[in-house]
Length: 361
Image (cartoon, rainbow, N blue to C red; front, side, top):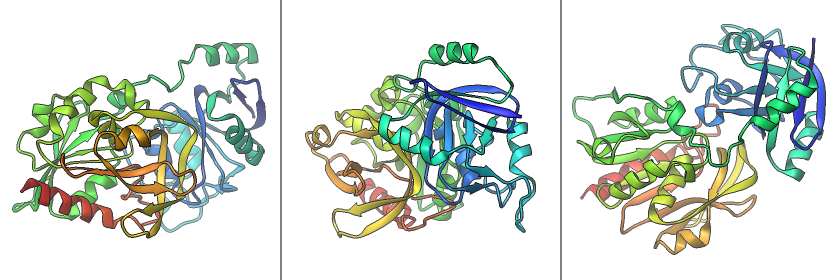
C-alpha cells in the first residue's frame, strides 16, 4: 500500500506503508543512531514527532518487553529507508510492523531518507503529515496547517506521571532523590536505584513542596516540547534551587537554566542520535553521547546567572552541561542513561550522586 509524507514547505515523499493504517501530524526530525529504535519509539521526548532513522535498515532485531523506555510508543510516525518484516535476534519477541500497528502509529519506508534528512538539515525541522490510509492530499494539507507545531507547547505535562509514586526504596538509601517527571525514561530511574538511592517520582506540575518533601536532592527528567512553555514548573524550580542539590538532564537541563534566569532557543534541526561528541571543559575529555532535544540553553544568558559551562557539544558548540556551584545545580543536555549506548557517560550518574551528597552538607 502507498504512503505519503507531506512537509509544510510543500516537499513530498512517497513510499510504502508500514505499521498502522493511519494519518498523523507532527514535527519531522531525524535520528542518527544505529541501534535502539525501540527505545526511540518509546521515549516520551519524541511525543508529537515524526522520526526519520538515518540507518538504512531498521527492525532487524525485532522488539521485546525489556527495551521500552515507557509504557507506550510516543512518536507520531516512523520512517526509514527499509524496515524489516523478518526480525532475527535471540531477544526478539515480535516484529516492528505489528508493534507499530498495535500502537496505532503509521510507518513509511522505501523512500530516499538521505534526501529527506538533507532537506531538514537545510531548511530545519518542520511540520509534516504522514499518511498510510489514502487520505486525499487536500485533507492532509488542512491537517498540516491546523497543527500548532512544537514552539510554545507544554507537552511534558501531558506525558509524565499524573500521581506520585515510589520507584525504589532500599532499606538504607545512599540518597533520597525526588524525580520531577516531564517524560522520564525508565533507565534513569533504574540507574539511580542501582546507586542505592530511594527514588520517588512526582508530576512535573506538582508544587515545589511536594518535590522537596523528604528529599536530599531533586532530579529533573527529560521530556518533550518547549521548555519555556512550562512556566509553572519553572516558577516552582526557582523555589527548589538553592534549597537542595538540583540535578537535570535534557529538558531538565533547559528548565533549570530557565529557573536560574537564562533563556532557551529552538535549534534548527535539533540533536537526535547516539553519536554526538561532547567535551568536558574541566578535563578536556571527549565522550560520545546520546542526545534527543530540539531546544538549547543560551550561553551568554546562562553565564550571566553565575553558572559555568561544564560541557560543550563539539558539533555546534552549544551548551551541553552547566554547574552553578553557589546554588548547587548540575545539569547536562544529553542522556547519561542511554540504554542502547554509547555508555561513555554512565559515570555522570555517580557524579550526580556525589554532587548531591556534597551539596546536601
